[in-house]
Length: 135
Image (cartoon, rainbow, N blue to C red; front, side, top):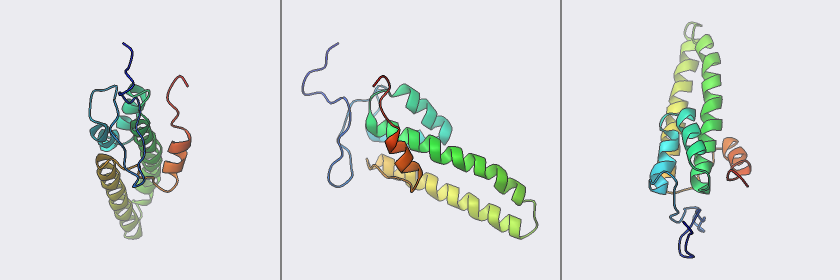
């Protein structure tokens, strides 16, 4: 089915960093799909990255989720080993867990608000590599 000129196939950033509504392959609202990219960490990011071939907003949040939470998952393995060290290891493990929780919540809130919120290194990497599939 051909798209009419009034339909949008991707999102546009506004001057405030928020997005305008666009079509999604999943049938979800764009901000809801962006939030869901973070719900199960890198796994839900991967699902939405594969399901959403054209929507730049969703692909950005999906890829940022894959990169950030993939790295945090790998880092958690090291932190768990450090956590065996009495007192200092426990403090490091607790601080890391709180950091992960805060990053996760912020990412979900910002995506739901329709913002292209970029994490310091993962956001830049995601933005460079979010080209729609087949292009």
